[in-house]
Image 1 (cartoon, rainbow, N blue to C red):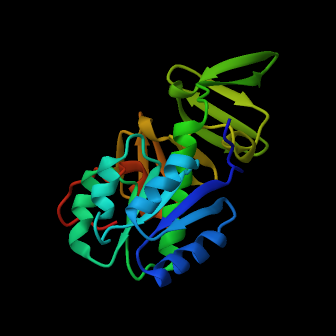
Image 2: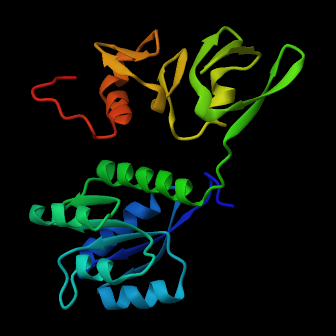
Length: 241
């Protein structure tokens, strides 16, 4: 079973040698990536993925004979695809074929790294066996709690208070100890609180509303947290966050 320490096998595809070398050097700087191969055309890339296990493709769009987009459309069960190009007009078409990300040249290492983190998260999501519950010690019992029932987890010194749909459970753990066992729909919104993103009812100023609980958001990470909670599905004219 894949783990968070697995190295993801990468294929870099670009008809320009300097572009291939640049992305290859970026891949080699990231501990959870492994450069498996590079290719100068879609046809060469096809031969590689037919014979080698590839987890992520960094594929240029504007290539001779067969474009990156046309090649991606032709693949059955493609690996995670991240498109690269110097032309902004391809962005919409790239997203329409369900690629993970779109990188506009010249690509900064910071932007590349963020895309790789997204790819790692997607890979683990697709390949890791999902556990839907956790057991914790509550008083003298070892209690089973379903993740989809958890709404709020609050730190209280060396204890945490777990608020579920119908109950509250106090257990001798820290947030850090529990967080590593939680699925991706949980997010830490400040030093004392982890919440279930699916349980959020509203965002009000610097606070999140879950049922009748109002939880403040870390000011330093407010924009990132709100983007994570809304998942790009916020359509509000003139809103500043």
